[in-house]
Image 1 (cartoon, rainbow, N blue to C red):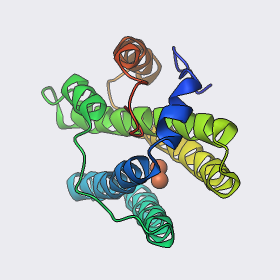
Image 2 (cartoon, rainbow, N blue to C red):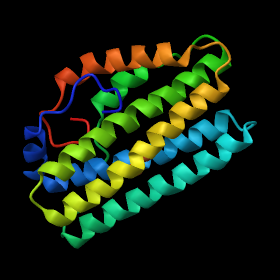
Image 3 (tube, helix red, strand yellow):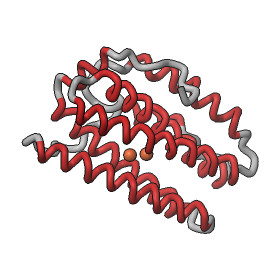
Image 4 (cartoon, rainbow, N blue to C red):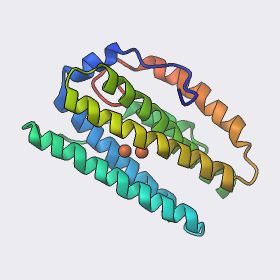
Length: 193
Ligand SMILES: [Fe+2]
Ligand SMILES: [Fe+2]
């Protein structure tokens, strides 16, 4: 699925379902970060009109996801907790190239975003297929489709705007790195935990 090297153990979904307030809070903030990242990409790469147009659409969609998760939190009588640390994303952030040319950094920022979309999509699939709560399962199925399309979009722009980076080769490096990294997770009730 999406080239991921390691699939999540479905038992993680039971851990998540055991603490819905926690997973929903973490998830809400994941959507906020996805919106913020799309805006950051615009900030640094405003000369690409089609990229700006699409990143604006993604930012709005991610904010809509944030709103939807927040509505579920309220409906169930939970409260939106403080933003959780996302150690997994922090490790991916460290892997992202920040030196080299401006274009190298831009392309790797797109691949960083694609990587998070791919794993989030996979985690949403695991939730949708394994949790007993039917309405949440349906919600996660819907989001899974949306995040899969974001993943495709980020890869597409990386290929379109890469000047020197061999995107297929670099994407394989991302998948290998992530495949090792994810072995440390799958034990906590957070989206990437
Ligand atoms: Fe999203
Ligand atoms: Fe997304």
